[in-house]
Every structure is written in structure tokens, then in C-alpha cells.
Image (cartoon, one colour):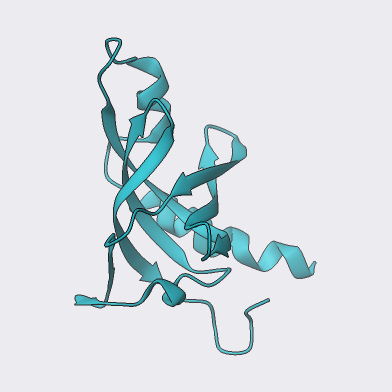
Length: 123
């Protein structure tokens, strides 16, 4: 029961995501040597600050997917219309990631915080 509390916020964040979704990235492959851009609403599962990677949980169709993205130096994290530190991305935070696919993986260009976990609910 304890792990179910994040389903409603994730479902709400997924519902308000822009019309493009992660499934479209795979449906429209890029030409060799180019990158594609996309965005996805998701929940932060884990932030590895030293390696600047973020593991997020998102919904694709009727399934949940775990994605790992790279946060380059200087990535813009926005919360309530203002810049926020990378430490804002705690487990349970609902975010909208704008990223590009590159030969080395997904690279985030911007992060918008849509909702933070309730106080005392962080892991």
C-alpha cells in the first residue's frame, strides 16, 4: 500500500503533459548522426548528483518505464517560475523533462518541477 501513493500524482502529471510523448521518439527515428528532441512528465526516482544522472519513472501506454537521463552542467531546473538547485529533484518530485536523444543517451535541456512530494514523504 505504501508504494501506491505515487500513482495518482504520476497519473495527473502524465495527463497534463504536452501532446508529444516518449512513445513518439521511438515511432519517429532520427536520421543517422542527428538527434531528436522530446519531453516527458515523470516522477523522480533517484538523483545521482556526482555523476549527474537522474532515474525517473513514467507511464508509456499501459506500462511504467524507468528512464535514465544525463543532466549536463548548467541544466535549467525551474520550480514555481524561478531557477532552483539540482537538489530540488528529490524522490517523489513530479517533473517535466525536456531532453534530446543523442548517440550517448538522453541528455536533459530543461527540467520543470510540476509538484513536490508532501513534507515528510521523501525517502
